[in-house]
Length: 227
View 1: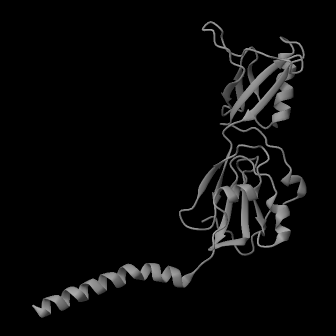
View 2 (view 1 turned 90 degrees about the vertical axis):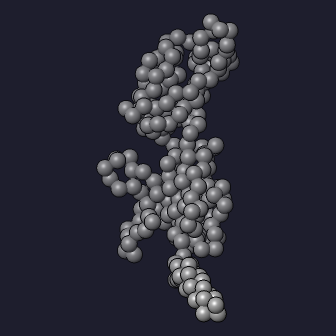
View 3 (view 1 turned 135 degrees about the vertical axis):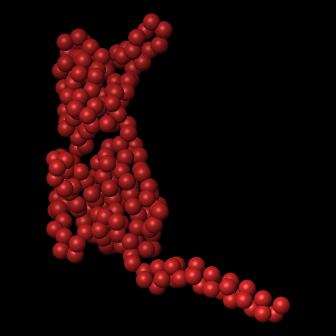
């Protein structure tokens, strides 16, 4: 699964990539709050007919990268960082409020971690924007004995959906690899720890049912002979 050829040309994990800010994408659930006077007073974002006061609302980024906002209508935020989207909304809300301050948070970001053993895949929710590769692996239970710590792949979607995803190779078996492990993950990243191939263990697993079947047959045959 997710194997690469021996001569595969991995993408270079530059320092600038490890510090990239997350960019909003389709199907993201965004929670936002709006304040006036540079954050002095919260704005009621919901109807007050029922006496309810809401200072935060959730919106889903549609497939065309847009969201539907109170007063503002539709805004295209896909491809923007959270700060860029906040600035865009602040500029638009300035038509209605004095010095608006907008706070955004993506609440459904997640990564998939394959730690290197069969059936151990985990979907990790990203509570923080600065979650690292090491934290994601730790949340999945760490790298097991049959996982290659020196061959950890970070697979990230390409901005162009037609092109192949980016694949970065990390060596976390040495202390020097801690720099790579501090790379911030982004939503929908895949962290894949290549498993070790253990031929004897695999052979034993496959042969055990057959040996059990033969042993049972011999016992039954011996039993009928005694009769």
